[in-house]
Amino acid sequence: MIRVEGLSKTFADGFQALVDVDLTIQRGEIFALLGPNGAGKTTLISVICGLVNASQGRVLVDGHDNVADYRAARSLIGLVPQELTNEAFTTVWDTVSFSRGLFGKPKDPAHIEKVLRSLTLWEKRHSRLLELSGGMKRRVLIAKALSHAPQVLFLDEPTAGVDVELRREMWEVVRGLRDQGVTIILTTHYIEEAEEMADRIGVIRRGEIVLVENTHALMHKLGSKELTLHLQEPLTAVPESLAGHGLVLGDEGHALVYSYDAARPEDGSTISGLLADLEAVGVRVRDLHTRQSSLEDIFVSLVQERQ
Amino acid sequence: MNRINLQSVKTLYCAEMARSLRTMLQSIVSPVISTSLYFVVFGAAIGTRISEVDGVSYGAFIVPGLIMLMLLTQSVSNASFGIFFPRFSGSIYEILSAPMSYVEVVVGYVGAAATKSLLLGLIVLVTARLFVPYSIDHPLMMAVFLVLTAVTFSLLGFIIGIWADGFEKLQLVPLLVITPLTFLGGTFYSIDMLPPFWQAVTLANPVVYLVSGFRWSFYGISDVSPLVSLGMILLFLSVALAMVGWIFRSGYRLKP
Image 1 (cartoon, helix red, strand yellow):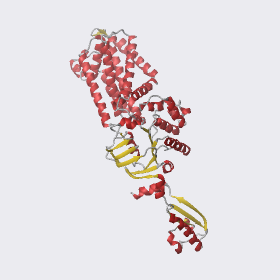
Image 2 (cartoon, each protein chain N blue to C red):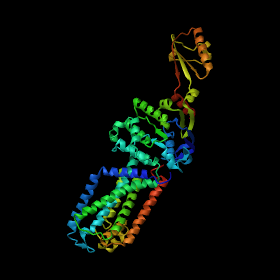
Image 3 (cartoon, each protein chain N blue to C red):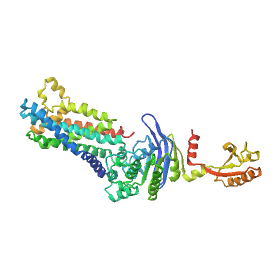
């Protein structure tokens, strides 16, 4: 749906925000772009949407060059910006209708109603924007972006500053849009959000795309698991006969931590062996729990790895 | 897909007009009051001491100047505020990401600003009639001068709205440049009434040509040839269009 080829952006002050970015977004997917502050996420979105001029490279939206054939390219895109940018004195209905008109679409009250209802804004359609809560204003921005029925929706930090309940509501809205065939590209600081929603994840750092991977494959490939065994009696050191398992003593001797890769079947048999060896040396286990490394752990390790 | 996007232009134009209509009461009452005050101060107080200028009563003489004063100030302020506000609030992203050409964006903003200032100019024209009788010898040329001036100064306002990075700068040019030039541009007097040196200096003031040409369309009298006035307005229009074109091509303060 979107192809970014050799895209670079250097601002007038010499700051290079994007470095030779290549990226392909598949039709109908939810793609999450992750990166620390200043990594280039918003700049990349801004170049694709026509808000920032690229220094090099090109962007194709459904085959249309976003500079040479900007009308066709832009008409396919809806953008929800990071900042709450609304004209305070207009009503919800008027501002959403305005957005539709800007994209050259004739008035369609039925479509606007559908969009407002899907975002639970219908009851507020006659309210002025200054009367709305922050969460509702953000939903208005989404409604504006959807007013012209785009095929691609960019969400720049869609749930920044939004409470947990509303964030989950937003996720439902985004999934609903994907189900309708809308391609969604979102940037987020909430790794949980990307993990929860995205089909694929891209990691950007200092203007470079350092990784693009299917979310589940990424978790599978890079995610290790930890088995923590809480002991009945504390140990001062890991028994020598258990040294081969790579155990680490934790919780001031009250726990043994064992790291393994759940994706490797042979590690499963090692757990059985570990438990048998513990029994053999008389180490009694009071409780145990496992923890899978989150996307956040993966992200932090990826960024640190490249520093 | 490369044809003119009329729906987008119409949407932008109507939204800008609607913004003005929300404050229509102030928009109408303000020029009516200020025009009435000008007639009371200049027409009644000073006009009693100046019976006629070039064969036209002083009250009638200042009518074209007053309309031009309203037209210039309103064109600049409407257009500058129209583009500055979305830049200030951040909602300009919507305009820049829409499938609109630069020309369409300018037509939407400048068209609305020019329309509003033309309406206010006509309100001043009607209000003036309550105070003094006047004639319009060349109504077609009057309309041409009105429209060209409104469009040119709306383009200037658009440029100021792009250039300004704060409300102070937004007011700077209208207050420190436009208003003084208008007052010194023959709005309330004929430049023939000035000493020769100041007559020459005044000819460097672009507003002189606008007021003079416009006054000619009313009474057939002018400080400079109406053709020169027309040529100067077209020159200002061309310069303003070139500057707006450069702004969009370079992305100046719009698109880094």
